[in-house]
Image (cartoon, rainbow over all chains, first blue to last red; front, side, top):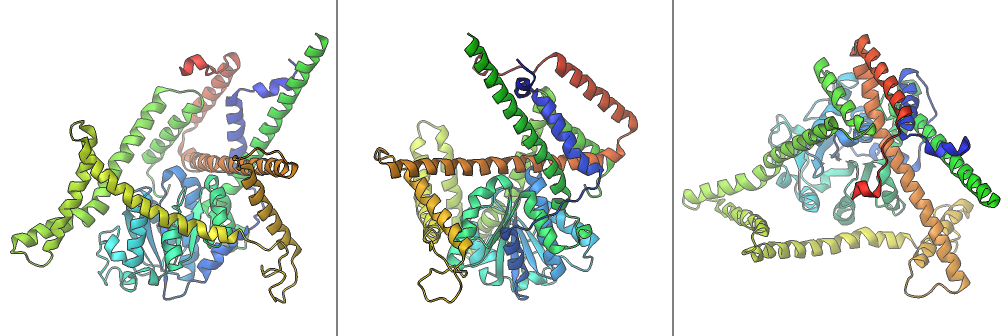
Length: 290
Length: 266
């Protein structure tokens, strides 16, 4: 067995170590790489930017620690956009994880504390908490949001005008400009049961692994836009803050280590293939001698 | 982690490293942490579902309904009928009884009926626009319209090429999945072969995205370890970690990981 053929027998733990070290470098040294904005990210940004003043955006933030790496950045940049522009929004967490509302609160409270201390809960945004029901819940929300949610995540009644003035002008789908669903794998049922029936624009923020199945909805204009993994979050951040030094979202923080990690994987794939072909060539030579 | 106390960061770091210890080999710490995570998730979900869904949408209206009945059929008594929903729900549990299994079939039938109706609507509204969108002009103008529709927009080479690739891919992949007859003629065989290659490319895109997602999950944890946990770790812990890593590497060089043989799997 020659040296090259041994490349396909590298202990997987060496690869893990090489990957961890290559990803660690950008956390220790500041490295910036250019970000190119994809059409699906730009169209989502433009759709949210067009939200009329008298309407709200419904954010289905149904993710937790399992997909935090991708989904945190995806809601962070959109919340940042809406808080900056004064677009009112309602957060819900439908079906997937009961931890969704807490994670959304964490993202919003961080933004409010660091950038928008003048934005107030109940006036600029409301968190209605977790609910279940898939397509039935979607239809209930579209017809009358109070039939699905009696109280918000803090326990205030939706009819409490003192604590939730925003909810006094939100009753059904007519008051909702668009729906932005962020989770590992957003529920496709938003498309037939809300967009298909009422024409409300839908945007998705999904894990990269799921994006391939959703691109077809962008082509057919059933989705208005989509943020794909960390890349989508970093691209949206680039649209929000053209100056690279102002970008602080998790997406931007993770995109450079991700590029390093991908490079390490590509190198490992090339080495593995070199080892494979070297081993095959060696076997042929042995066969010829025999 | 915003405003997290040091002990919380330490706990999160230990759990993270404990879970990642699986990369070295399966071990008891990993299994214990996995069971703790599952237990926490299930327990928390049960409470939240009761508090946010079953309580306000079923239990409380039903109780108000019975209360109204007790007050001489006051308005809202009809809400007591929610008890029927609870009754239907409990029928599912007759799955565990051989004698009364037939009771569970009532509610299974109702669920299947509702599901079939919903799926018909869902599939129609989901896929009809997809089919409509697949009809594209092969020579397209810049505004996306066909050549012969009276538009004044110039012909777009890139849009036309895009549409040709799109329609060509659909046709080739559909030909590949035509199994009702043998692919004898050269055009059919060529289209089926092209369809197979195009499918391979899409699977490659799937795999690339899979790597991207797994990497993002890992990077978030790495960032936590480097930025949140790293600064509060005393130097002697770092020394111990480095010593552990060096000895682990040394062990790896001496003893290769146990391979999963077919016998082991059995």
